[in-house]
Image (cartoon, rainbow, N blue to C red):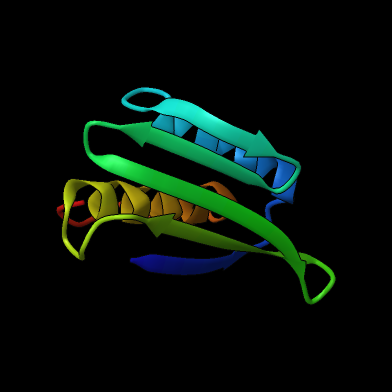
Length: 96
């Protein structure tokens, strides 16, 4: 599955947040300037960032699992955390 989110947070900060978020339950499998790959018992998750529209960052999170797997729930939760970081008034909700 693949998920997208556009944020005002700079790409490097999104990747740092990805490392903090996913390192609790997964291992960093690969890393480059704009991508982090994590792997664990739930599968593999890739986080990519890129500039979009000048002041925005496009965050793409991809899993190697089918929808509604544990990896997909983690991916959606991560995007919600990124959204909350850009908009602190946002309340995290949902079963992910």
